[in-house]
Image (cartoon, rainbow, N blue to C red; front, side, top):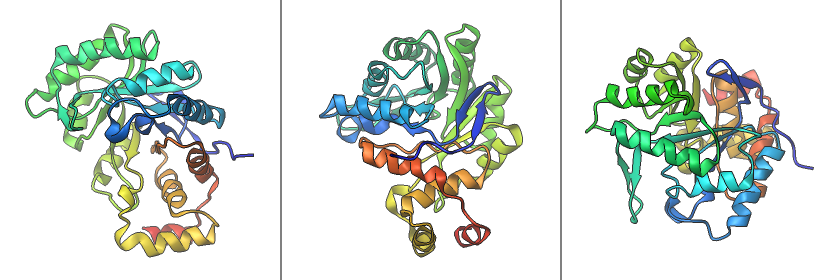
Amino acid sequence: MAAENASDTFDIGGELTVHRLGFGAMRVTGPDVIGSPEDEANARDVLRRAVDLGVDFVDTADSYGPGVSERLIRESGIADDAVIATKAGLLRNATGDWIPHGDPDYIRNQALASVDRLGVDSIDLYQYHRPDPDTDFEAAVHAFAELKDDGLVDHVGLSNVSVDQLETARDIVDVATVQNAYNVVDREYEDVLEACEDYDVGFIPYFPMGGGDLGEKRTDLESVAADHDATVRQVALAWLLDHSPVTLPIPGTSNVDHLETNVAASHIDLTAEDRARLE
């Protein structure tokens, strides 16, 4: 029997209690995150299996597909059993580009579309996917704040932001989470993580393995993995859980076996020696 989610919990926005090891639903779409997956039934099975294993925090975005990931979440029937976070602020095209678009009217429109695709009355956590250099940042955040005031959004999050942008947004709306690229190898946003710790804001580290580019950490990760009879990926996930009490890793996959391996990482207890090696 596969191991269930053993990660401890975090209260998103002070009220949505979730296990800290979540699931990222980007990979349940088609190639290059465009269109539908070849096997939609399998995608729905992966989503349901995640919840069966005790994963109760699922992250997606309107741009995944676009719209495909949100639709599959609705069709899988998990929205009542998990906190669903989605995002707006990026456009897609057929060649797979990710194009920032933070126009406030567009954000409001996308919220309505996401509510419909997810089959919910309101969005648990709605995140600004990436600041748009052609849109005033404060104006975009105000759009998210207004959606919260209107009851269409329960909590507001940010993604791909700096500490200064986080603090600017906090003057406008209660920020529940920040989602930035972060892993044991790439710690560019350590300052953002530290700010989230100070503010009790959840920090959602995406790209948890850095695309497999482990650089100078490879030897240490392999050594720790061998000590725990685990994979390097599992140790990288365990490190994210261990590194800070506000991290909410969201490893994604389109494969049930891979999902179960990821969830099993929540059972790894790193030692002081492990931490020293990986720091």
